[in-house]
Amino acid sequence: MKSIISGLSKPAKKKNDTNPLISGISGASIGMLSTIITSPIEVIKTRMQSQRPSMDPQKGLVEIFRESYSERGFSDYFVGLSPTIMALLSFWGTNSALYEYGKQRISRRIESKYAVHLISAISSGAVSELVSSPFWVAKVRMQAQSGYGSEKIYTTTSQTLARIYQEEGLKALFSGLGASLIGLSGIAVYYPTYEKLKSVFRSRIKYKKALMKKNKNNLGVNFKKAEQDEEEEYEEEVKLGLLHLFIASSLAKGISSVVDYPSQVVRTQVQSNTSNKKKKYFDVVKEIYSKSGISGLYAGFGTNLIKVIPSTAISFTAYEFLTNYLTVAFNALKIN
Image (cartoon, rainbow, N blue to C red; front, top):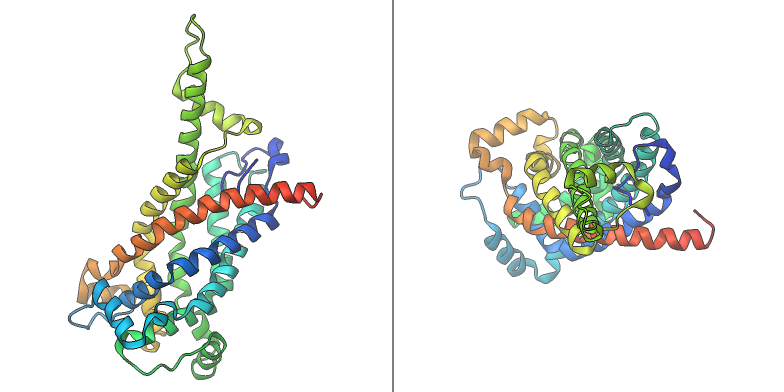
């Protein structure tokens, strides 16, 4: 059974395609659960990212954590949760469905698995960023406002969106979109890396199984042959276990985070600070770098890894299993 990420690169195997509807439901459901669990870390990360380059000294993880609790209590760790859930529901629901749909369409025209995953990831990510942008802006405004002891002017999601629109116009609801699109480089790194790691794990599993079956005449089974078979024999897909999926998603996310994290910092700076809304992406990059150096572009990176690696690993692992479960259920109901 195919998962959202596994995909197909040959038209002849389209019978194993995952229903895009199932992909959308799975992506949105897992994204919402992950958001609730990791909300405290996300709030602290946003406040670390939104600190102005001119602030001296820059506040660290522990200081912001203590400050948040002392000023507003435990509930402050969940501020902005509502727009975050809405953003992720719209982002991952759209992204998962479009990624699967695009992958199936593109695979009928392009043979390269890497190209299929790359094009599908970037195109689905771009549309998803556009759809979810207003909610990301609302989320950042609500979370960042408590970082400097300022008055709480953003309360609910609807109030925040309405206030931004009335005071700054429609364009403000899409501030930071350019940085988000540049940040798609992370998705372009993540999906192919995740796929390659899964392919390697499948190859090793096939290799071990082949060794167990090898008779006394030494049939000459080797790892490269197993890897080639994995690329060609889609109908005999090797199902990976929990540990393999966890490791693959963790490593892929760690690598992709290094690539796309600066764009996240710039996006947060633009979305949280109205004075930055007219500045271009590279203007903000230059300002941060001139005042804080390369470390400024990675503000909160350690905190981000604490959140994003286990979150992504758990989410994608749960996603794979939920997708498989829903596919069986939909098939039983003759929906798929």
